[in-house]
Image 1 (tube, helix red, strand yellow):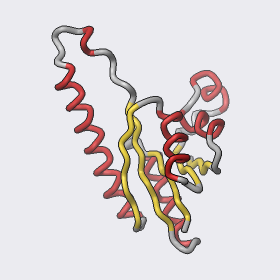
Image 2: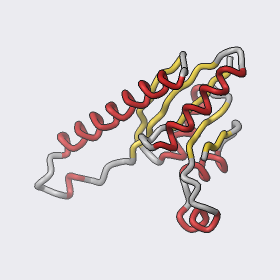
Image 3: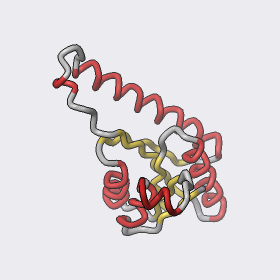
Image 4: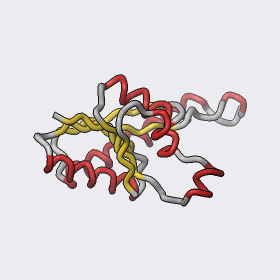
Length: 142
């Protein structure tokens, strides 16, 4: 059974990555998929006395949970059968690669915005960093 880690961010690119994974499912003896969303470490809200750090963290967790719930619904609509979700906090590329290794994933599937070589070189991208760091194959879906 093929084990995939699919990075999701709520964008149409992530949906296309799930659709590509569903196509792989039909070509293999089945697969297990883990949808992962990585949110950035929040700013140090304690530096801003008008903000309640606990309330901000709770709101960020709720937002991430809602995004993963929607991604799970989308995954099921694409035909993915064995799917679970993971919420992580940190630097996206680093956490995606770490989690893929931790879970023993056979492949990482990630949507890319396809900004082009120059923009990718200047701005970098999560997908590009994952490709360079991953120890398993990475399927980039444009």
